[in-house]
Amino acid sequence: MSIPKWQQQLVHGAKLFFTPIAFLFIAWFAWQSRVTIAEVFSRTHWGILVLAVIAWVFSHLLSPLFYVQVFRSCGFNLGYRSALIIHARYLPARYIPGGIWHTVGRVAEFRSLGIETKSVAVFVFLENMLAAAVTLFVGAMILCVQKGWMLWGGGMLLISVLAGGAFFIGFVVVNTRRLMGTKVLPVSRYLLLVGIVALFWCFATTAFVLYVNAVFIGFGVPSIIETAGVYLFSWGVGYVSLFAPQGVGVFEVVVSMLFDSGAPMSALIVVVAGFRLVVLMADMAVYSFVKLSDYIGGRANPLL
Image (cartoon, rainbow, N blue to C red):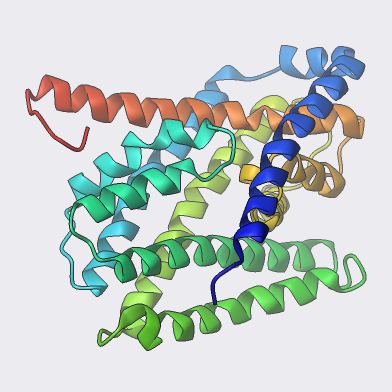
């Protein structure tokens, strides 16, 4: 069932409106809590911060494996190196207002390689569905165990159940004739895709845990396991918030609500937002490395 054009325009407009508003509020919080924030960052352990960037870089190296396996299931043999080039090439597009341009760029690239529309649709569906399902399911389960099963009136447990059910529903949806046609995505390949996504989030979560331990020196923070749960759940909530591109604002607020820290919430929101700089540095490192390696190799790769 296609989404009416006016609804698509409404969501797109909301994204464009919400992003600057979110950044304005974060800037206001930064000014209001400038003393606390200065104290936090004055204690930052920069070596651990570098490790956080490296951990996120490794997560990027897993993403092309997901591309390869999805399209192999659809009958198209996409090599790992080509997938990495496509992934890296459009990383800067993630920072264009709207939050969709990284996906738009990759979709256009896949179509230019001759991958049929249905196969690209399977890729986009699985990438988005599994990202939300893995983060919300694992994050909510960790928080239920760490903070109590009735956290937020049992809502956290309900979210984990719904996210768990999404794995089964997603498999059924993909294997409908409308998406796969005469092809079938085997259970083993589907589980492999789930495993790749889960491993990606292991590296991404490690990056956030390292960031927290590098920056929140002197302030009370949850255990490593609980911090991981807070990150995964908060990212998932931000991701499914259609009005917030890349969860800007939503992610920071949810983390600040779940963190047990001695810092004021307004300051906490700003410090958590600083993790986006870690992601930015990792994105630019991967983009630059792929571009540079292709240039040094003297290959005129049309993908770059």
